[in-house]
Length: 197
Image 1 (cartoon, rainbow, N blue to C red):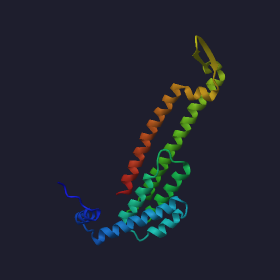
Image 2: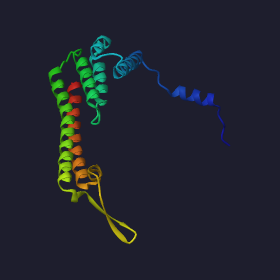
Image 3: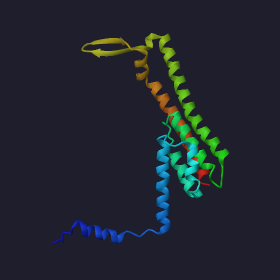
Image 4: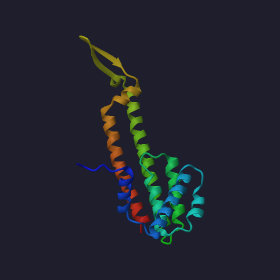
């Protein structure tokens, strides 16, 4: 027959298994919490990129790199222009504090990251506009046949409906997005490598 243990007994057994952290590890955890708190304030616009210098100036390079990586990882392909610019400014502000300052290379790659995203939006809009103009010139391309009972009906779709149902357009957009995401991820990986040097 199995012995039933109380929650307290189980908790005591688990605490015996937990290793005790060294003072250095405890300090590291506290510093990481401080970084997370400051970046949370930065993301919420409670502090500016110039204020990051004030808060982070006492941190060693490896913790500054963590802060930069946090900022970089929050830059996604779907981030808006404001978020991208804010994170770029944060990364550059932190880079100023590092002994192994690679500001010009990091700034160049951040600009490329943002340009990649902007180019995607322009290409996407260009393709959609081209098809929109084609649909306006030739209304027959907006006709849709469907069966209702025993009869075949033809309906003229609006331009927006036709765009939404155009399989070729959807495939083109997916292809461009896939290529651009790949480039975005490569630049992001290069940035991570630069910041971690």
